Image (spheres, rainbow, N blue to C red):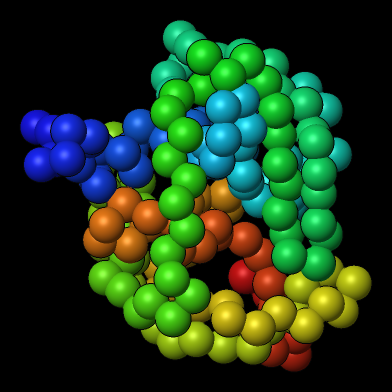
Length: 167
């Protein structure tokens, strides 16, 4: 059902902009289409990025290549055939937004319970601020959307307390 302005509803826009990423035949991450032919995901989930493909369904998978990476923030931007990846859904949520949040899981949107905002440490001892710790950890690279269908975060790996392990 379209929204009043004629575009898709926030939930539909969020689902349409989410892609599944594969290495060979193995699903390794989720990502979000941020511009035609460009996908944002978790770097740690895709390794070196060789042999990565992605699409909205297993029948629409196309090869992707790495455009940009940031190890400290655990982010990777991938590129591929723009018409095959799905709709660009990138519209960033306000930095101060605190929920409600949702993420795609098996073709539906699920509530993301934010435990707390934390300071964390990324790769190479990068200090990360504005990090949200989730009560349950979705797959790396999963986009987290606000209730308006705007991207609030991407699930990645970081250490909250290196003495107790990283997640």
